[in-house]
Structures are given as structure tokens and as C-alpha cells.
Image (cartoon, rainbow, N blue to C red; front, side, top):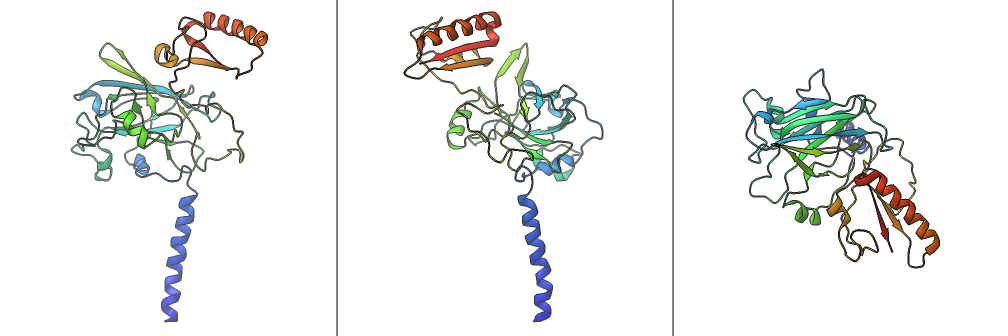
Length: 291
């Protein structure tokens, strides 16, 4: 009996060690992200064309930048692995595909960001899973050169997908790396979606994050500005509750909030200044006065 106990202890200790190491994974682990290393090319560029590009479906360009945790500095040499469904909503294998990656299908690929942090993925728009209510999406896994393991960010969703809003009411975004929701523009027959990724944002266990982050009332870097319908006190939409984000799009913006008892002299000075800046910068800066 003593010998049996002696043999079991190392096994139990080994499982314990494995559980402890799993909890230390940056990002908390990822189901399927490890498959990014199977078939990974030795040399990767900042632009990739998926196998789906020549297949049936809406052609799509996903483009953007990968940024360091400050949300401003470009991050170079970051590997982004993506995988998605085909035009019929399946992760379909093809002849010759490594059996170990069948669950990711054949529309998969890699990019490595350039010195400006930029990347481009030419693919087709994925279809949602058949007979399910999950919106169409593209999965992303990130491998930074200085980190020990990969981690996942929010999957890319499309704002014109009718399945998206009902899904988000039940399953809100984690906003890992920033919002995964993209707005699709169309140029001729090509749809274009811009998606920036902020490294470490909302990633559990990410190194060098301050233990006590300053709490603010605003959004984190990389988080998307939600739609809202304020009463417009002045400007072209005066007297209405027009949604500024819906009407003018998402560019750089300033929300000037003064509360219920503002200093009107100071408020007017700020409004004049912000209005001038908005005129000079045109569509690239919108100012909203909230009272």
C-alpha cells in the first residue's frame, strides 16, 4: 500500500503543477490558439491573402494597425493568426490540409506587422454558422515576440450583421485588444473593414499592467464609442436627438460635459474654441456638448 501511495503522489503533484502553470498563461488560455503554430510559414509579411480569396463569396479586406499598450505606438513583428468559416458557414477542410487543424478549416493564415504596425488580410466575408444565431466572425490569435504564449482577442464581427445585436445582449464583448466590431465600407466589389488591435488591453495576466489602474468615466484606449441620442443644444442638429455617431461616423471626437450647474462664461469660451477646431478639422473631429 505504501508503494502504491508513493507512485500516485508524483502524478497528483504533476497535475497540480500543470494547473498552476495554466493559470499563469497570459490571457488565461485559449481553446485552439495553439493551432496557429501548425503550418506557420517561416517568413511572414504584413499582408496575407487567404485561400478563400479565390472562392465564392463577398471579397473582404481587413486592414488596421497593431498598437502597443499605450494605444498610440505601432507594434512591429507581432504575429496575428486568423481563421474563419467559408461562404457557407463551415470550417471546411480541403485535400492536403493537416488533420490537426481541421477544426479551423482551410481559410486561415498569418501576418506579421511591419514597422508601422500595419497589416492587411485579403479574404472573403465569413458566413454565420448554419441553423445557429451566432453572428459571422473571424477569430484572431496574437503572438508578441517578447511574450511566452499566444492569446486571443475579440473576434471580428460586422456591424451590419442582423445577428450581432441580439447576440451582444446575451453575450457582451470582452473587448480584448479593443472592440471587435467593424464597420464595413464598400469600394467597387470589395468590402473594407478597419480593425486596430491594442496589445494587452483587457487581457488577463498581461505583464507590466499597473496593479491599481486609475478609474475614469471615459472609455479605455481602443474601446469603441457606443451610439447615444443626446438633445442637441446648438449646431446643425439643434433641437433634435440625432445620434451623432450614427449620422457622422466614428472619427476623433470630444464630449464636453458640464453638469447641471455650469459656469456659462467659461462654457461659452470652450464651445467657441471647440467649434473652431471642429470646423478646421472638418469630419475628422466632432464636438458634442452635453448638458
